[in-house]
Length: 383
Image (tube, rainbow, N blue to C red; front, side, top):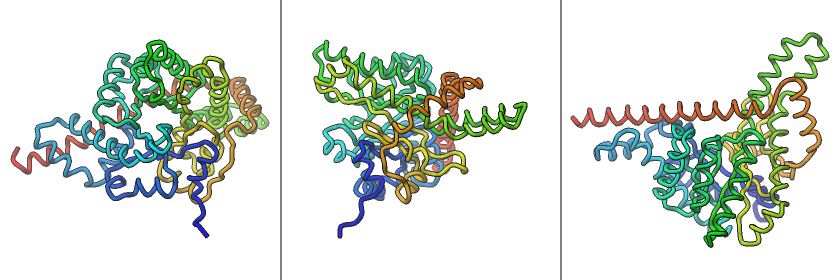
């Protein structure tokens, strides 16, 4: 008998592509990434400053490259930039067969603009164009945060035919803004007689961080509640907001697909802007470790998982369509949260701002790590 198909590979049957939310040089060079493609149906890779901070600081895999670039006189910022571009380009090459076999629908690797420009429209657009050209692979996605300043940059880049991963989306209004931008960009390209068949985009909607913040707010309200019944009601809502919020966003996504505007664009060869579930590693150990994969499976979706979640789902995940299950319950929960003073739009705005600040801190720490290694190398060589 042939070996059983990996649970991760089975997700493709339900329209979901499993991606890895991790990258490092060792994984690429020793064939680990290719093995995940062959064994588990890996469909893509996402990166961010926090991931590169861990990868570069985690051992000596980058020391030789840092030494070589330091000898060329590059600054620590320039060295980090080169390391990231080289890793993303190499991962793109590993995923190239997936990209080709899927007709350009899958097989992408993401690279993020510096979080320092996340609140600057012009610099975000310029940085996205620079990174897109530097990686120089058709299956690269440039990540731009879906901030108020980021949306015009996203629109400009999509109009120019760049592949864009819109990141740090936490609320329905944030998602709607970038879905509208994708439609507007494709319409622009059609009217300008530009091809739209090669333009790809995903909207990265974050999940577990929503629960982390909402659970904290619920605990605070429960502690201040006047009676036990109200305390129990508040506690019963914990651990549910992330999935409910995501399911309502997916419902909105489906309404885009059913719209007349999309149907007209799709007829001209446009690719669906898939919803990518991000932040799907469980933060609370009381919740099952595959929660944010099990509950959000459906067509035209991506789930990008940290390594631990990837292995957990591979071992004991549940493969079944679930993303539009109990949608009425999702709406009811969001209404109940609103009634007790927890507005998911305000939660989303706070999480987006916090996400940018966390990525800035991680990016700066990565630069500092490179600088420390660069200084040691130059000092040892008498430079």
